[in-house]
Amino acid sequence: MKITENDIFFLRSELSKFISGKRLTHSLAVEEEAARLGELFGLSKQTVLKLRVCAILHDITKEKDTDAQIALCKEFGYKVSTEDVSSPKVFHSVTGAFLAKKLYGRYVCRTVFNGIKYHTTGRENMTLFEKLVYLADYIEPTRTFEDCVKLREYFYGASDFTLLHLNETLILSYDMTVRNLLDEGKCVHSATIKARNYLIFERNKI
Image (cartoon, rainbow, N blue to C red; front, side):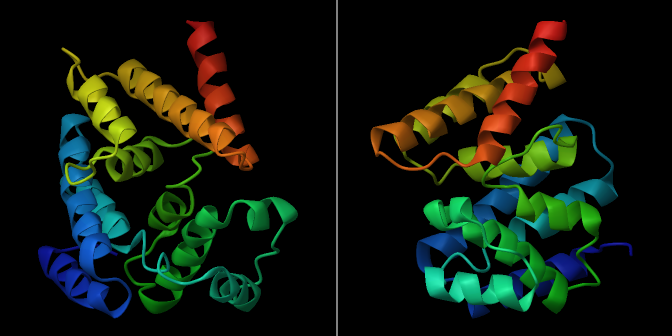
């Protein structure tokens, strides 16, 4: 289905049903950042609109507690693992993708679905679309955490925005995430480890 600006306006108007306050501001900022990144990497207008759809919807289940997240997983037939329970902040990526598909299926193609699903952990062999959603979520300008600021400065400090630079930026983001989780004594989701290792292997091929 072809996405239009009217569709974007409609989805923005729906967001307050799910999130509020800073999280709502964040999602709209991710939309703007995703569009900027899509244009930087020469994506088509229609693909940029899909990036914006993905960004708008990416956190729609973020405000639900763990019990509600698990209930949604069961509703959508997603088998919850011990690793998932040990990484509760990851749940909203999975449940958000499924709920977005259920409620807004006409806008949520497989590309958008996966963009939402992997925006927190990443995964090995990510598509360019998925990488840009992930990065937009991390570096949108309202995020003031030290790592977010550092990653934003690193990415936009480049003289040329190449796929190689994008991959190096993602590796740095994974390093930051892993270090923080280790410092907090928390589980590191295997999808993040696989995502990082895949990019390291790709780097070593060059």
